[in-house]
Length: 420
Ligand code: AMP
Image (cartoon, rainbow, N blue to C red; front, side):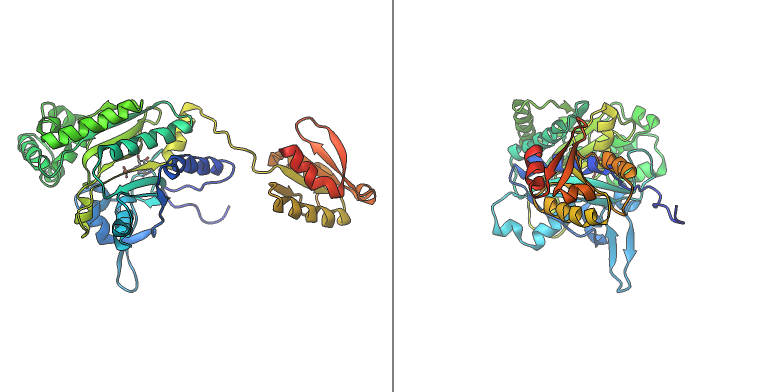
């Protein structure tokens, strides 16, 4: 062990488990790639103001959880706590909304940073795959998002997750509701911080997890009763389209989510095997965000799914991903001459697309075979001086245990044939 450990709230991804993370990222990305979403990558840090404005001054993410820094040049930066603000910033900066058809559909995958109290499923460095559809207001687009996330989870074999759905209204009806909720909250017995939150962002008080607060919230005005006709019709259409696609969901009028930018459709994917950190993903419509960061009006919708928690959810359900062995062929030379000859074969096999590894540092047969076994390879190629003198190598099938000599010249083609 070295003097150093991974920082608090972080962990390392190591083989063989890291293969699960790659598989989860790929499974989430697959339906997006198949549905017109292009890949985008943005920097790991941005100007702090982007998140202050884009995520919201009153959110926990901005007030408590952001890693901020001042560079030697005096720039105020923050490690990205989420993906949407950066993706929209990049799309606006490159004028993607002007040069192509709307919506601009993008997907991303990367690391995010929040200074949170670490616990199982909650880390200071975590991984998301996300999708954003920028510049279109169409219930089918909101439905598409939810259906694609559902498809991603199902393709992994997840079953015990639920989709919670709500509408947060728009700039017509939300202010009226906000007003009504605020006057209700003013009549309650709340602590200082919650009172302040009620003034800045009253909807988030509904999200308070404390039992004494929840008890007082019984009878609070509900947003559904305040939705304007346009929002109601939009939401009904989203619900109908998801239902028609055979995707089950639950209406959850309390779902407000922790970011300020959401309007109309909001949704969360929760998994019942994860304890308190049950949200595996979430998203929604953010029609006002572009204007909040200085862009034109661009109604948009998106989601981010947490890779770490999706892996935990798979473990909670006991789902074993079908991950093929990384190595198909393992080469074991016996002696110096065999090393040179087999190493050349390994290079040739790799060029031919066969996943191949080699027994390095001239181990004895026994420990080399142990490593071959551990590699998961289906075939082991063994060659000693006598084999080479006869112009052949031995191919051992690790499943059946059978071993057969094969001409050195034919070994690449033979292994390709056997591996199909
Ligand atoms: P949010 O941007 O907070 O809606 O997060 C979207 C998803 O990212 C969540 O549903 C989680 O799966 C994941 N996530 C958010 N914060 C963390 C964290 N601190 N640790 C691990 N996963 C997280």
